[in-house]
Image 1 (tube, helix red, strand yellow):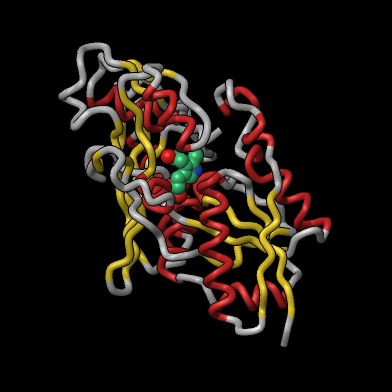
Image 2 (cartoon, rainbow, N blue to C red; image 1 turned 135 degrees about the vertical axis):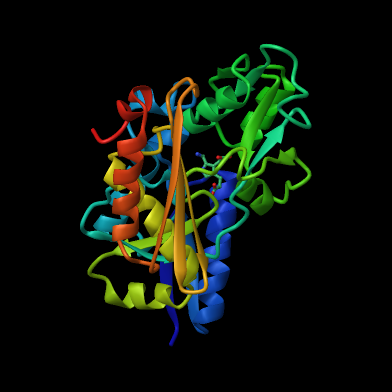
Length: 303
Ligand SMILES: NCc1[nH]cc(CCC(=O)O)c1CC(=O)O
C-alpha cells in the first residue's frame, strides 16, 4: 500500500518541529504511507503586535487550518493543543495526541522570581502567567510579549523585558533546554493542554482517523480532554487566567485546577478524581471552583 497523507501545520519553527514528530510517528506506524507536510499561515502568525484577546479568540491559530481540512486540501492538521479553542466545529475531530512533554513553564532571565529587581517587567501575553507572576510577586509588571519562541527570546535580549516565561515543552522540542529554569508545578501550574500535540481530522474521514489512532497516546489524550472539558464547563478559553492539569495514576484520573483574578490577588484551587474519560470529573470540578471562587475570580468565568 503506497499512499500519501497530507498533514497541515502552521509555519513557525515549533509548529514545523511538531509536524515532523507526527510525520515520523505516522510513517513508522504505517509502512508504505508517506506524510506530506503542508504549511498554512494563520491569522495568529500574521498579527504580532496586539494581545490575542484583542483580535478575537483562539480560532486565530486554527481557522485557516480548519478551512483547509474541511475543503479537503489536507487530511489532518497538527496543533499545540493549548492553542486549540475549547469548542470545535462538529465536522472536526481530535483524532490523536502525541505523548505529552514537560508541562512546566521555564523562567528566562532570572534564576528565581525572588532574584528579580523590584518592579521588574515580565514579558508575557498569557493572562494565566501574568496573574501567576503577580500572585507570586505583586510588584512585578507583566508586559505584552508575543511571537514565536525565537522572537520572544530576541525581545528579551533587546531589553524589552527583564524576564519571560516559556513552555518547557516548546523549548525542549526546539532543542533549547539550556534556556531558563523550570518553575515548579506547585508555583506555576500549567495552562490546560500545555505540552500536548494533537492531530485533528474530518469527523467523517474514517480512514485517516483509523491511521491516526495508531499513534495516539491514550493517557495524554484522556488528560487533555479532561482539562479541555473543564474549560468548556467554565466557559473559559486560552485567554482566561486558569491553570489545569490532569494526571493518571493507576486507573484514576486526578484533575487539579486554579482560577485567578486578573491581577493575581485572588485565586481558588480544587481537585477532583474519577475514571479517565468520565466527563463528570471536569463538570464537578468546575462547579466546585465556581462555588468557592471569590467575586473577582468568579466574574471572569461561566459566561
Ligand atoms: N501560546 C503559544 C504556545 N503554544 C504552545 C506553546 C508551547 C508548547 C506547548 O505548550 O505545548 C507555546 C509557547 C509558549 O507558551 O511558550
